[in-house]
Amino acid sequence: MEPWAGHEVPRLPGRGGPLALYDSARQGLHPSDPADVARMYVCGITPYDATHLGHAATMITFDLVQRVWRDAGRTVRYVQNVTDIDDPLLERAARDGEDWKVLAMRETALFREDMEALRIIPPAHYVGAVESIPDIAEKVQLLLKDGAAYRLDDGTGDVYFDTSASPRFGYESNLSRAEMLEIFPERGGDPDREGKRDPLDPLLWRGAREGEPSWPGGELGAGRPGWHIECAVIALDLLGDRIDVQGGGNDLLFPHHEASAAHAERLTGEAPFAQHYVHAGMIGLDGEKMSKSRGNLVFVSRLRADRVDPMAVRLALLSGHYRSDRTWTDELLTAAQERLARWRQAAAAPAGPSGAELLAGVRARLADDLDSPGALAIADAWAEQALAGTGDDPGAPALFADTVDALLGVRL
Ligand code: 5CA
Ligand code: ZN
Image (cartoon, rainbow, N blue to C red; front, side, top):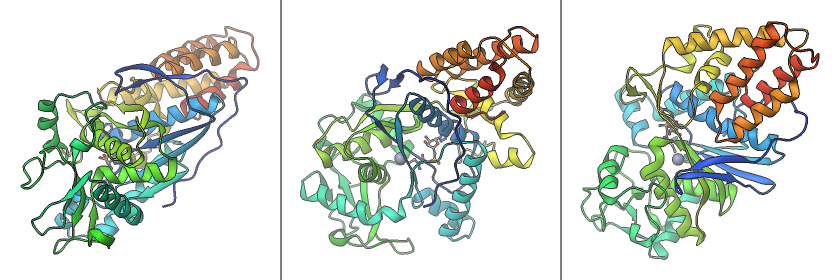
């Protein structure tokens, strides 16, 4: 699939330092220490509805990772998927009497536009599940041959991963078995499916059913891929056996990232699959997680249609720390619009306090687990002083604009 168009990112003087990131597996802050090429995989949308502010917040989080790595001199290899075939997509298409392919294409196109408006640096590879089916089928066959997967003998052709083939299973989410059993059915799992060896075994391949789309699967027979194997295979194919960051919202901590790590590790014999498992908090509305199933959504495209500046949306989402679950409010947006106007005025000031100190301050905050609220506070302080006529660095206003553009993705 085509990713969206990118923007020029200003080059900043000097270099940023290494990025310390919270890793869900080790449950602590650790330096992300990529080689010259940093490898990141982020779980993208299931395109059955428009991009909401929760998706936007998660995409902005990993956009910051990319910006901080680039500023530290790394080349970033970034891959994102589109789950363009899965049960929720088929269910929504059936509900609305629409072709699932048309629905997926329309919502994916809208997502691309939203990402571009929010100035998210595009991934090098933007990959759909459907186009990856031959690779996925091949890897599921390998897991079967290896004894890490089994086919149900009920004639459906469904293939499951045997979690007992993954001795580390549970290391990524750090959940107890009881917690896993509770969450699994809420996140697409089928613990009660008859014939499974373990209730937590995840689906790898769903045999063809009457009235459902299916694709050839070689020895597997016709069918379609399970969800976790999709992300494992796309990441392995395009990034290699080990990656630096596996990212997504914290709703993917379990089972999605646990299972995709287990699949990848079994396929490669290497562990851990990702150095950092990074999870963005959930954006909520009226006290509940924003989600398509609950319908409490604020769409990026709706705000754009209402002529809200996407840079204000970005600033509003950056005003909270990425890891905290937080609520979207009108006040948050108003405050961001005011901040954006102040920053624009300050960038037009004839001079201001030291631009070098401002840059160092913003770099330091972001390198500390993407402390965007801290970075915003430093930029606010600089802007306030510049507007008050304090400081005599004539290059500072331009460096201020470049700093918030390159590191925060906010174009003034
Ligand atoms: N296609 C799968 C991932 S492979 C999926 O979860 N799709 S999604 O459309 O439901 O979500 C897309 C991305 O946004 C995921 O990384 C997900 O974790 C994140 N996300 C979903 N809802 C929210 C929310 N309310 N707040 C923050 N991030 C969210
Ligand atoms: Zn995923």
